[in-house]
Image: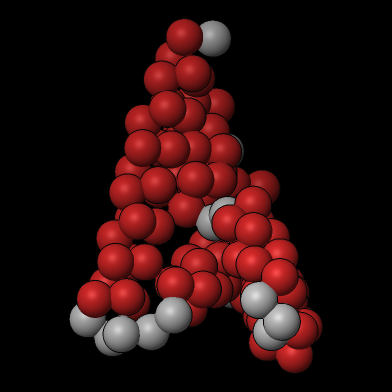
Length: 121
């Protein structure tokens, strides 16, 4: 139990740090709105989750702690639907309804598609 908890915590720290770094990169280097970074990590994270799911399902000998590190920790902290939800609500509150609807549709379609491609890879 302690090993699994530590695996999730370590993976989460890494995943959250990557998400923060991508958001900073998008803001400060590409001068893009914050939600672009969130969209990017959600799509890439969903693809990697699909790859991981497929790999872990078809390969034995991988410890539970390793599985938890990747899926719950790293990818769970990297992809963030809670941030997505907050950003969408903020767009609506700022009278950017069209942007909010497009962001929701693009995120949903791209993330589910990326996951599917990950599973099929």
